[in-house]
Each structure stands twice: as C-alpha cells, then as structure tokens.
Length: 59
Image (tube, rainbow, N blue to C red; front, side, top):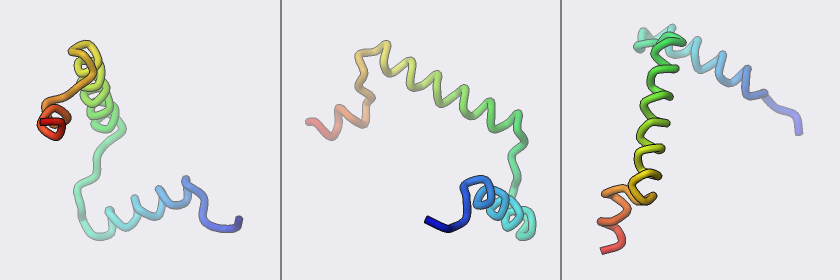
C-alpha cells in the first residue's frame, strides 16, 4: 500500500494549523492533557469501570 505515512500526515496537519493561525499546543501541554486523560481512565476503573455516561445509556 503506497500512501502518506503517519508522521507525514501529522507534519502536514501541523503545517496547516500553523498556516491558518490556529492555536498550537506545546509538547508539555500535550503531555499534561494525556496525563489528565489517563487519570480519568484510572479513576473510572477504580470506581468499577463505568462512567456516568455509560450508566445513563444502560438505564
């Protein structure tokens, strides 16, 4: 399969965001966001694996 690789796709997206003036997150901001997400996942697993949204859909 020929095509554009993942790294090239990310580079192109980064260039488009920069060219249009969209906000750009630093590596530190991305890391902090990932840590927050993982903390929420861990908290959900510790609470029995179900989040509020999941329980609403099961009602």
